[in-house]
Length: 213
Image (cartoon, rainbow, N blue to C red; front, side, top):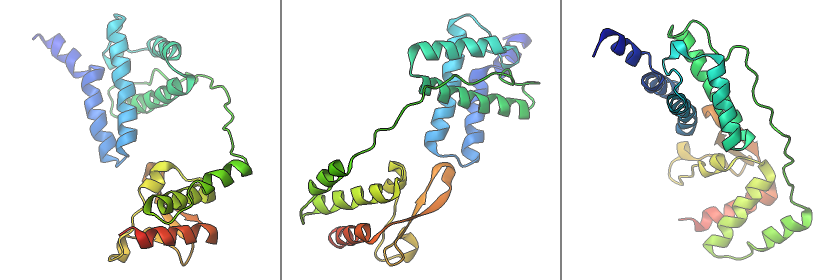
């Protein structure tokens, strides 16, 4: 391998993506965030190679990134293209900080416009029907009623509720305080936050915890 080839390999986006992954993991980002960020970088590198465009980070320009984002808009939903745009912003910012490039090619780029999407809201009748479907005393019924009540009260993300801990023998591994009507969840970016619940939710949770063992 010639000196020029070795230099090209060292500065290749594919090689540097592996270093970026280490940086993201060292920053204690969630595995899902790390995967999302690095997936965008891998896709960009594959696109550039397929189109005969440069994959060396010092040669990647704004027009190359814009061509990739345009391709993503043609293939995927605008929201997906938007996520990859923001991931690449982080990538080039890191490359700039590491001295791999002098200036991010995305410095003056604007993110793709995302159409406003109204989130459907359940009616009161639909919520009552949903809760009625969880009536019962068996494990599944108590679990489902507790889950739906928590979601209705807090609007929390699925990952936050799925990560709740409850160890009846270890107070340090309990994220539920039914006396105070509080749940301690781990939000995005590994940031903890406290969610308040009402009595109508605390009671189904208590019934579920009694049958859980």
